[in-house]
Amino acid sequence: MVAASDDSFGAKELLLQPGPVCFVPGTYDHRGEVVDGWETRRRGPGRDWIVVRLALPGIVESIDVDTTSFTGNAPTSCRLEGAAAAGHPAPDMLTWQELLPDTDVQPDAHNVMAVDSSRRWTHVRLWIVPDGGVGRLRVHGTPLPDPALLSGLTVDLASQELGAAVVGFTDAFYSDADALLRPDRPRTMGEGWETRRRRSPGHDAAVVRLGLAGLPRMVEVDTTHFVHNASSACALWTLHSLTVPSLDDPRWMPLLPLTQLQPDTRHRFRVEGNVASHVRLDAHPDGGLARLRIVGPVSWQARAQAAIAWLNALPDSHAREVGLSAATLAGRPYRTTTAMTDADPALARLLL
Image 1 (cartoon, rainbow, N blue to C red):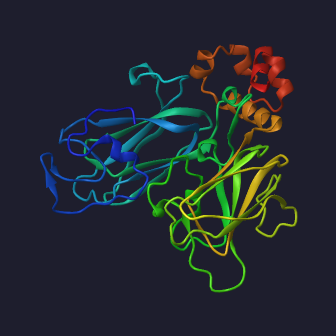
Image 2: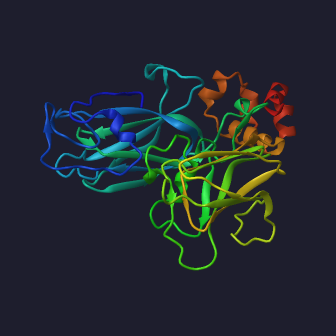
Image 3: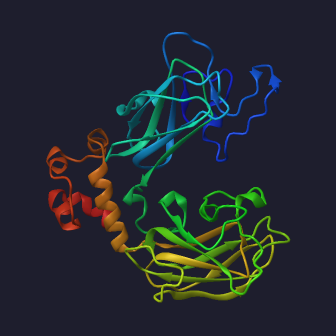
C-alpha cells in the first residue's frame, strides 16, 4: 500500500489483508462504526483513489473489488489504472495508463472484472466514485520477475513471489494447500495446509509448479504451529515438464526420501536435484504442514525465458527508463534470446 486520497473511516492498509472481510456490526470507535476495509468520508461529487505497489510486478488479468459488508456505503463505480517504473518511486512520480474504464460496482459483493492488458505493471491505482468503502482488492495475473535480479542468486523457487502455485492436491479439508507457498512466516496453524485425518491406507500429496525452473539445493519443510497434528513424515519428488503433471505421473524422480518430521519445527535438508519445474510433496499419513521452500539457482533456460517475457511486456515509459532504444521496442515481440541480443547487445547482461 502506497497512498490514498482519504481513509477517514477505514484504514487503507485493510484493503490488502490476506483473509476475507470480517465485519462485526454495532462495533464503534472514535472514527465511527469499525469496518474491515478501506472507507473514505462522504465527499459528494468527485472520486477517491488508492495506489497499490504490486507485490509481484506482472501482467494484470483481472481484479476483484470486494465490497462485502459495505451495503449502504459502497461506491457506485470504479476505474483501474496501471503504472510501471524501476525502483521504488513516490506516487507523484508515476505515469498512469487506463486498464479498466469506469465500471459499475455492486454493494456487498465480489465485483470481479477482466482486464485486457499485455504489459507488465508495478503499481495500480483504483478510483472509486464518488466515495465509500471497499473491503478487499485482489489483483490477479501472471508475475514477471525482473531477470536482472535472478542472475547469480539462489532463490526460493517455490515462492509465490516468483509465481509458484499449487496445481494439484489430494485434500484441503481444513485449509488451502496454496498456503504452503506464502513468502511470510505462519502466525497460526490456520495459515498452513491441513487435510482431514486419513482413515484409509495411503497418504496426502500436493503438486507445486515452481515459479521458475531451477536446481533444488536445499528444502525447508515447516510444521510451525502444527503441534498435535503435524505430518509425521514427508517425501519430495521432482520433474521437468511443460504441462501440469498428475500426482501419479511415472516421471517423478526422488528428491528427498521419506523423512521423519517433528511437530512445530522448521526442518531444513540439503538436496541435489536435477533441473525441475514441478515438485510433489508427499505428506504421511496426512497433511499438517505450514510452509514448503525449495531453494536453489534458477536454470539458464528459465532465466532466458523470463528475460524475453520481461522485455516483451515492458510499457514503453518503463522501457525507456531502463535505457531501451526506440528501435529495440519496435522489434517486439521477441521470440528468442538471439533476436533479443541482436536488437540490443547490452541485453546480454540479463542472461549472465
